[in-house]
Amino acid sequence: MALHPDGWRAVSAADDNTLRVWDIETGTLLQTLAGHTNVVYAVALHPDGRRAVSASGDNTLRVWDLISGKELACLSGEPITALAITLTSWIVAGEIGGNVFCARLLEPGSGGK
Image (cartoon, rainbow, N blue to C red; front, side, top):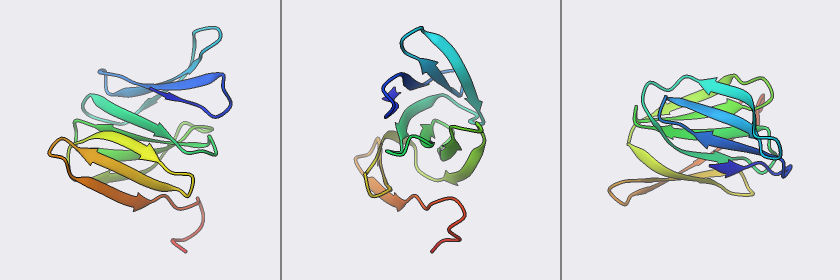
């Protein structure tokens, strides 16, 4: 579960392979993000509130656009079970064996610069 910076939304990880965006004041489901092929273990939100990152038992990290609901990127590798995003756009991911991985989350349209 991750709280949105706006204070009224939350994003939850689910065992049905999805993420769900909720209005926490009313309990209304606002959006379902689908793309993982196994249970979602962790979710983190970018401080700008526009993007989320999720980690799944399918050994992928996926980056989501919370405005459109579209998947922006998919990285595969280790089974990640914990996530955080720093104020400077670094994804910090921990795997069950104790290793920690870091990756820079680039701005959309930056072309990697």
